[in-house]
Image (cartoon, rainbow over the protein chains, first blue to last red):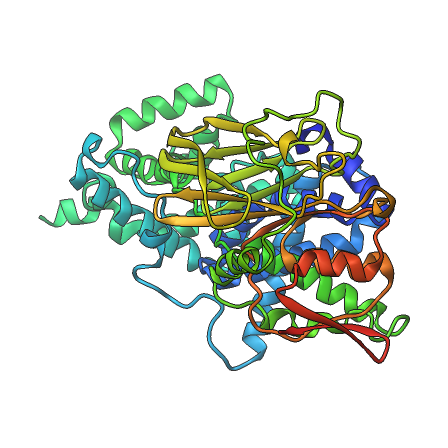
Length: 208
Length: 308
């Protein structure tokens, strides 16, 4: 199968004419990416799948208005972010389980297995897993907007310009808000810095 | 410069959006200031560690969930115009029975309906027709089964299997669903693609081909590719499906503007159905799909599929 034969724009045009298979192809092309991003935000498999589903429902409903002025992927990042905000809002307005149910083992289970366990230092691997867990937890403690920005820039590797498009904000605002988000994240990480190879805080060193 | 000023510039320093003069100023401060150096290293974690968070594998149900929700939403939108058209979907989710059921079902179905199979010795490609196939395969389709990607190539009918991880695998073919002949067996290396032309699965002129079964085994898991073909030329027109049973039924329902009600619970999404029934009647198309394993009746103008 060569779905790469069709550009997004061609598939979108086919969708507009009611071609279900074209829509299916678009979903297959982007579902992994959408899910990855949704998972980084929600940190929960079920919620990430729900956010991804809702994203594609919105995509389906909006394709007829999609003019291709921005990349489909950029637009999808925006939709996922908005769906995520909506989910969080709904969650706060209802007294039910939080969107992300903390799981201790979830993250490590989700990780892809090592291709060759003999080729790596297992201690280092365990340390790496622990660092990843701490990082994910730290991201989860950020307010939604900061979480979205940090994930977009640092995990999804989106440039400032694209984040500005995704979040519909001036570039300067993106940078200043992202800096605040980084400062917040860095604060959250403070008690764990040793795990990342940094020694105790200067204050501690002085008091010794 | 004071430490407080330096600290506000560290993120710009890290993402490179700072001019050379300022960079040198900060560098010289950092050489003499353990506090700012530590702050820099702490922030650097965001640049060095976050991009390395391991990718997560989407759950196997993801595509199914997305598509069924999109369809459910479509259904709500069109319900007022075409009440009842999507009624059969109601049973869809309940019908989502355990994996593997259909594999058993398929094999059974060939046992009860063993006639009219492809002539023996057809594989591999001995009687493959030289001329270009008269039917097209429509839009390309990709299925992902637990790490194995199966592609149905347009224009070049072939089963293309690729894996993300090395795996022991086997592809078998059967005319009757009972005796399986191994087509290929070996280790699939990551990113290696294995291609098998499917030209030989097509109907041989003058013969009555009902079905072939392809069985793909990966590790301990077996998947069945179900390939019913063989409508007579006069029936062939414009129905081409390569999909799961439920999706295949869905397309038939849409194609013929008919309501199809599925009243059994033994439906699985695992098998990959290839139905090539162009210009068949709705009844013939459904019959071909269910292959005598279920009963098809007409009730109140709807097609109803029930257990035998």
